Length: 193
Image (cartoon, rainbow, N blue to C red; front, top):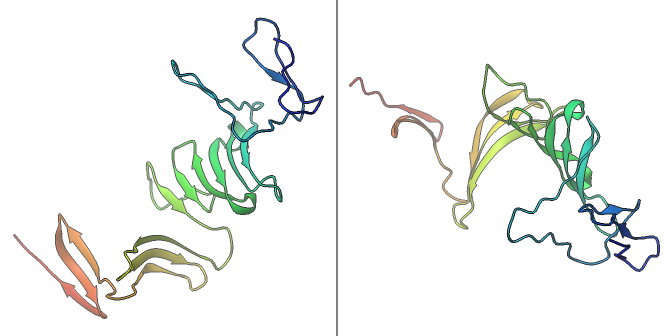
């Protein structure tokens, strides 16, 4: 109980009623130190952010120049019903929607056909390219490949590059190679057994 001061400001206090387990902070309360800990080694400590119905709960990251560089937020109900991650300039970069779909660079989960779970990489900017990229950057070959959709050229496909030894494109079935594209040549392998 009482009014423990968290900083030297006279109006910066946490107030709790006698016998209560809830701390009530004044508006604009700040914590003037480097570490805020929730310790409970005999149970499961929790940190709750609760918004109004259909509201947004936010955990913000910033610095002296910009108090909001990035945000982890939850949009409840009609606000979006999604867990969102905002990156540089507080712009949304990743969203996990209420169906468990992961959306990167877009809030639109439209796909081809009926899919139970999927990862959507998208853009809302005209003439951009979006891609799923795989790479092995070991310092010698540094092979990279991407499955892409290029809105500028109106094409989609697979593109690969490397510092040395560009990998050929292959299709395997149960570990057996069935198709290979290398240096502009197609190689088909067929086993009727």
